[in-house]
Amino acid sequence: MKRLLTPIAICVTGAMLTACSPAALKNESAAVTAHSVVIHYADIAEAVYTDSLTTAQTLRTAINTLLANPTEANLKAARTAWIAARVPYQQSEVYRFGNPIVDEWEGKVNAWPLDEGLIDYVAADSYGTESDLNPLYAANVIASTSLVIGGVKVDTTNITPELIAESLQEADGVEANVASGYHAIEFLLWGQDLNGTNPGAGERPATDFDVNNCTNGNCDRRRDYLVAATDLLISDLEEMANNWKQGGAARVALLEQTPEQGLATILTGMGSLAYGELGGERTKLGLMLHDPEEEHDCFSDNTHWSHYYDAKGIKNAYLGEYQRVDGSWVKGASLSNLVAKQNKQLDNEMKQKLNDTEAAAQAMVDAAGKGQTFDVLIAMNNTKGNQLVQNFVDSLVDETRTTEDIIHLLNLEGIALEGSDSLDNPSAVFDN
Image 1 (cartoon, one colour):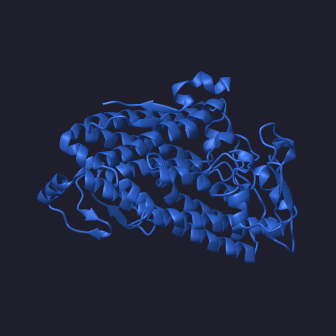
Image 2 (spheres, one colour):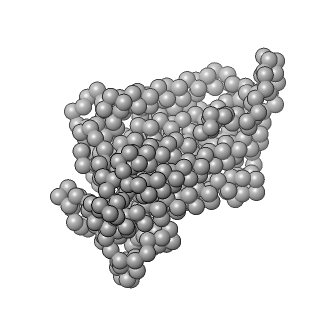
Image 3 (spheres, one colour):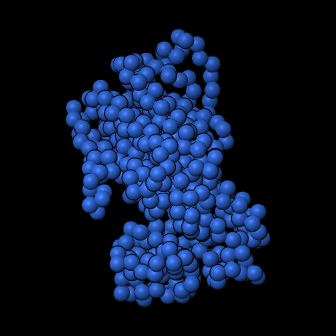
């Protein structure tokens, strides 16, 4: 669904830090142009996808350690590496909307929710054994050496990145057949979260990866799937990191536009992620349904951090800054600079709205630290928890209203922001 719209000055660039006098700050802001803002937006994209790749490679190292010695400590370390890998990636999601190259690619690495029975064993009493919508609902690739997909027999003897990407991902044209990406790996590391809206994440044992002391069968193939899915994630992230380098396809496509079109791309990403995707599909929908299956990181109960860093990515796009995983900063020409030149009050308002959203996200993070993870917060009759989540949604909606004002200020016409039935037409959620 689309919502149609009509018509800090910074002295740090890349990794270079220079001292800034008040006069230098003023001159820096005055020198900012739409073109320089768009170029810097591309530079941040290159940094954030490079960090996503680096942290995925670190995850692969932790998985190697787990498979070499399948202990609970090593499984915990692999889970920690997965959570760390989410930090830069979630900050990249603001690039999805407005950049077709990213949007077309995103489903390979971050699609959700998934019918996990496609991949591995599940609890049949709660999951069920079949679905009217998905013939592969409980196919269990890990336990099968062949599957019939779309009437064609597929050999699954060797679980490889190619098998996952070419035959299993969205098999039979069903979007819930998510076989690759962060959430497939998450499921393999945590297993199902069978706690509903009560505290607790997935509890897969390390022995599920131990061929000498195997639990739940097919430990060799489970290991193969985990390796193949992680290698595929790395290659997919490498592709996108390269797309944002000098001469890369995504950077070229962005810079072939006029500077004004580039600004529209940035604001489309900010507004669409804040409103339709994060505020609506990822947050409000689960709250309305009180359904933990609508939780973004549903196996690990890491959703509070994923939402926090999605919101952080929007803030990064406006302020023209990003803190890399090594602690260094990428800072430069920003939308904030442009807006401030024309309407300082509106710039201050936008920065306050972004801070308000971050504070609402932090409140969910703080609650999770006390055992109230996102699936607990959205539980029916958890009045205080529900309100924390609603506060986050409200802040994102409010932020989007100011984003719309900025679009009008900059005379950018014809921008379409993603909508969500949960925000725009709530009755439709229950009609479906």
